[in-house]
Length: 274
Image 1 (cartoon, rainbow, N blue to C red):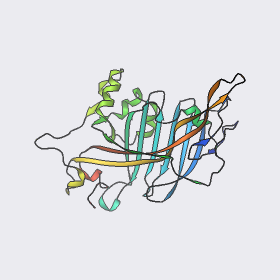
Image 2 (image 1 turned 120 degrees about the horizontal axis):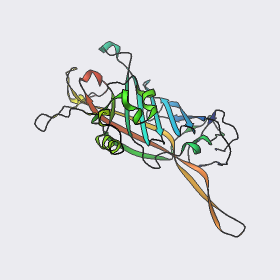
Image 3 (image 1 turned 180 degrees about the horizontal axis):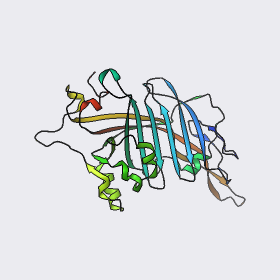
């Protein structure tokens, strides 16, 4: 069970439509939530969720079974969501120690609960292993645009902090790039990536054996547990009139599959035929 507290000390969380109380109290700059979840491969990991009310953002971070560190940020002020993957390199195949991938997209309404609500969550059973109540489908995102890391402050201040090492691996969708340009972001922030032609389309990295062939890479990840919606209950006042109030959360799991251009397959060794 979750319940609200009166301090902003470290907190832990729960999974299925669980009741919690939201009260009007003053919080500090942020709060932290730690959740034990089961990954798709059966391994247990610990998710760390941080809510920063001042910056109006939520950060979710966890390590996958293969050692990849996944970080997700929802920036509500700028309506931007950021995915970062620190993928361990294959040193015996000439890769560096790790590879940084960053994907950014427009943050839609009601994708995740607000930062203020997240900061109020408390967990009574921190040792339980959580499974999301709703397992949402896999979202396919064609990331056909490169983003200039040195100019991303126009989009979100979080991107520079998270993706400074992903200078040539920061991607977004064409539709998102157009959306931001329509709202005043300079076009020089974005660069359309090669996509081949109708006659000679780019091969997928999965289908080519040449490590130096340009190709279309695919990378998938899943956020196994996050509070996606607020639950509302109804009470009645002294006159008998119904009044809604926030009384719980709904937890979700959602997968994302990103496809994007790489100048050579060496940057996409995980995407191979098995």
